[in-house]
Image (cartoon, rainbow over the protein chains, first blue to last red):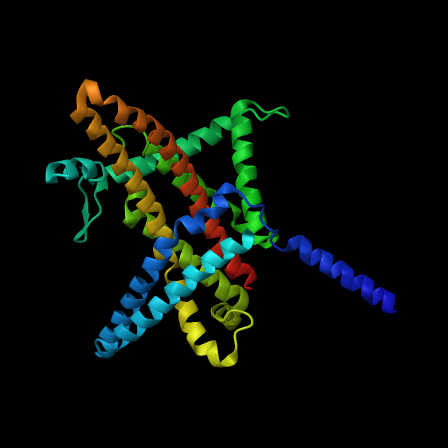
Length: 92
Length: 246
């Protein structure tokens, strides 16, 4: 009985591995994220500001949400930049 | 760089109305951008129609190219999204071929680079963003929002991480569109400036920028293909988040 359950578990695991996305082979083009880190870092605070401005316009609270979102946007861009860099150094 | 030179370098990105059309107060004119988009679409359709016209077991060069391009995108989707993502294969394939054709058409002298306009790239990116969000919501319901909380985040840090991840998620269409448009604009401006140097320096000094232009043209061709690949692979990555979550 226990063997059957183990067998079934093995089959489920192999099926899951089969349908899950495969790990990519590293290629030259895989380093695209590092080359475009500037776009990622610059875009996030801009989008955050736009979002904050939009909320302020609705609730007539300018510039409270704009500033809050700007702060979170800057933090978010640094986190994203850090993630990209550390992912790249992990690969090496 | 003087103002007139700047104008010359940016002149290639100017939209020109070919058939002025106005509908309910909106300007929906047929422009040079629309024309080159149609060229791109017709060239893709014509290529594939010719390539699969006489299908053989031992493929011809054209059939081989069509099959290779299909295999390339299919493996990209399978590797990044898994077998569940194969239902999106026609969409991903269309995106890749359209962006690639537009980028390559832009390399023909006196043509128009459709993908150099943020309005075009942002429309595509926004469509992808909305589609991925809807797919995620339909497939996982409210559980889709767990995407904003990375695994292993301490509970006290969760509110901050959710906001941070939310802004990162919201910036996806912007980064996707600016990356493509920015790369295309930068490359084409550089080529035009180099061409300006060739004319200014004349027969004696113009050989150096001319040789550099040859190298840059090759590099631009590579960038055209690479940017189409990046746009498509990022679409796959975003789709993977929606289909498979963490």
